[in-house]
Length: 547
Image (cartoon, rainbow, N blue to C red; front, side, top):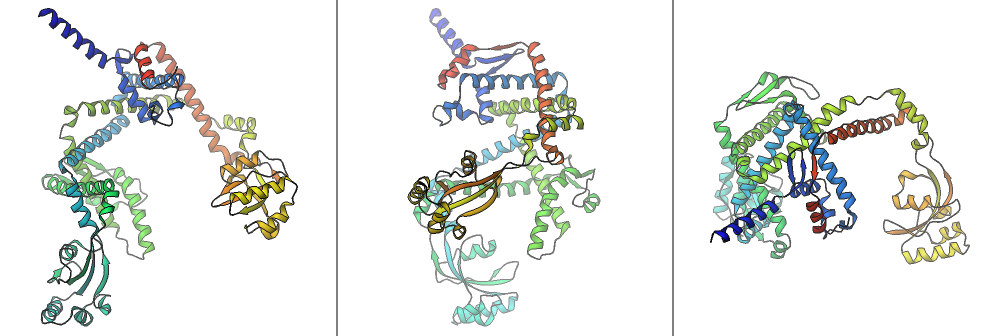
């Protein structure tokens, strides 16, 4: 019995260790295969590891090793950042605060989706409610007394259409109140709640809305085609979830606002103008500050969007109203985020803990590059000008082509014309006879065209030609074309000022990489790095990668 128990314990030990076998060990920190796969996935590289993917054949053992080295380098930078105390840097802390908040919010809404318990019956009801149309009439008035008179006349037997023409105050009065066919979302909620509950031929009582008073009659109901439900079930499910989560968010915000401590600096708010750089605390939500700077980052985009709309529709822009809307939106977001963080998802969920560690590593490495490497990159005007003089030929404008064209509707016709041209036929004559292009009357002469205005396939084809030669048959939208190269002018060298920014970017990044690579080389030399070759080979085998 003891012997059997020993073997059971040994097997469990082996299985546990094999499940958690590390891929690489960096200064005592063990990193598993799953961590590396997640890294590849995050950088859109994972598809190349999947044998079912069309891109799988592009991945080789050497490329995989290169990605593993990048993965190791990220760990080294993160470890070095911690050693240098950059995990206390304001930039890093701000990034991680946002990430932690986003992860908690994602988990909160994921939890809310689970609680919805969606099934076909619920989705079918939603589908019918959402997409049922009504053919409807209404009588509208801003006067309660007038609408009561209209209802009295209808009840006395006067046709709805006549009452509408006589008493209704909306643009549909002349048509007997006929509004046409409507779907949900076109009218206010109070109106729709009554209208869509009516059966064909039924007339409502008096319905009050912000606009005034209404009497509604439904002439006809048009139900959606069940086949649409089958075809777009997934889309409907997502739409249903979005709506329900929106409703839940409103309820949650209302509940949280009742308990929240919200302080607003109205004096500072009134002074804020678009384009300003203002310092100060604009509001506090349960002690958490909203700075004027953070507010302005959101406000300026929203403000200019609203201003453009107001100018387009000749509306009056209420700047104070926009400020309040933006601030309330920020307050609501903070309240929900605070609520999500209090749920302690990070203590309960191991996958969430792993995700948080991945982000910590990424932002530590980023902070290391920003704070340690970037300040070392120095670039002078002299270096930039010298680079320009040495590489002038790389800074040419686009080549220009003088072209003639024959355009026809079918590929077969284009191929026949090309054969005639190769046999010695006159290009301009065939263009006049057969081309459907506007240039046909000029023998197909298109004139000078800049290369950067041509589609890539046409550019590639022209690059192979000598003056006087013709292209293969090329597709251009829904027609087929043949081009003849009449002449060619090489692009002119662009002046230094025009390419200065491109040179700056190129040289800056080159220096940045040189400094970073040197630093990484030193880190590798002074670090203990051990790659588990057995696990690496196993991973190659799993994904059918040949070394």
